[in-house]
Image (cartoon, rainbow, N blue to C red):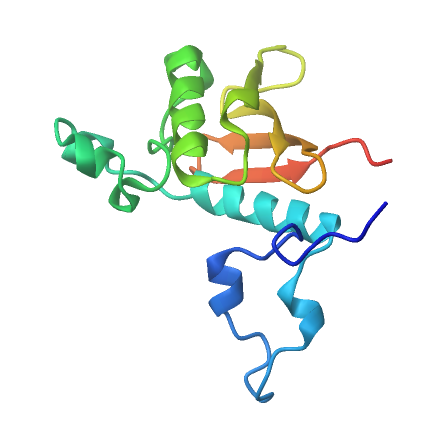
Amino acid sequence: MPELSLQERLQPSLLDRLTDDHPEERTEPPANHFLSVQQLRRFVQRDIGWLFNACNMEKAVSGYDEVERSVLNFGIPDLAGFTVSSLDIGVLEAAIRTALERYEPRLIRHSIRLHAELDPESMNHNTLILHIACDLWAQPAPLELVLRTALDFESGNVAVSDVSARS
């Protein structure tokens, strides 16, 4: 298989390129200019965790379409104080899908699949497990990404873990 061109290699996100992990060094090593598949997965998982742990301003920006779609509305609805039984799971899944489509461009939009784990044995009234399966943009072919998210309604925190099958 021929080596990928510079444009085809996996590059860090803009935030990661602008973050100086070693300020004492004058230049970044060339190895930091590109990502491995494992690094890409880890960075996307981290960024989705940041997205899910940020509360958007859905009520304050309602009716302002441009603001609703802007970075000012980054995050998902505030979940603190709810119980699983008091939520419409379909509405929550739609809000999470919208957040992923708006703020995580490395995911292939039409591939995003969400599934709430509603098994009473594996959940309690304060935590909901949500599985997210999608394709992650990569060269030469997309990568499957499967995430398990634990939404804690008591604290409002969301834990995201990568449960993708490794080959």
